[in-house]
Length: 454
Image (tube, rainbow, N blue to C red):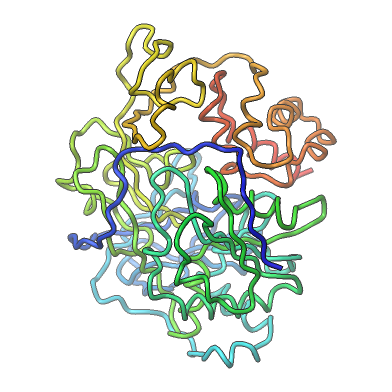
């Protein structure tokens, strides 16, 4: 049964520089990269190519030694020009120089009606070998799902209300048929329901509202109501020994394209946004694209922070970096390397703060958009018990006590306090409002790894 849920806890970070709904043309990026670091939980990635090898879009580049059936594939055709490693030879990037031909590895095309007749094993094999499987993320732990297991349900969040998030209805306009095909594939993987959640405040989405064989739900409320973890909590919570899969809409569409078009298609529309972007907008490209084409001559200044993803959970990259596998947004904000004496405690109308004592007047104009830099406006100290974490977490868990149990490595307390229900994005707002300036997302990931490896 469909549900309409209104969440009151949370906080909208309204930043200046939202992308205008217009797809602009830019110079086609020359290089693309697959980054193993995008995939949480990947252990000991093994290369399947070497520098100088020719590849097509969909050619496997690497696999995880602990889950070797899952292949991670090239987004474009061209030549592998560099394999970048970090300390201890950690694999960071496989860089491909695009040849402009966009040749694809191909599989047999299948109509939607035929998908319903295919076996689960056949569908899994095709997804695993053609680069699409990494779109499926399992809860708990937020890692790439194991093909050997079956979830009790599958969740798709069809909207995003994180800071400067792109409009999904605009992003995926015209992809309805592929989305439906992807849903038909996912139906083979669970005996439970497929839940699709849309924004209850927005116009009814043309892309998602007419999807068949799903449970459609409406969520309203501030961020993080668009987070799939919050939606799972209110519809079908994850307990110990439970398994739920999540897929973002892009991943569902990519599955549909693989079967309907017979090829791995990494094409995407992305948003480039932020207060330091001259002309925020949308651009057509491919996943893993070098971002230079999108920011060249499009920045108001040079002293900026460039983020693949949003400001809460995204990855910092340089101006010659690459778009992340799961990202459809590039955010550019000022670098916070200038400090004002007592500036963080002075009442001001230009600073956004959840704490009214600091951003004394900022909350009066709820429509105001802010230009915020990366300055944390404080320093690390012991946990201050304020109850503020609970005010921005629309879930029946106690974040402060959960985080303390992780620091104490108390496994029983972690389980009782709901660690199976959350990953980093679900507590990212806690990091923003934290007066003690802890790296909360890193603490949570450490706790998840402790539980997973126990």
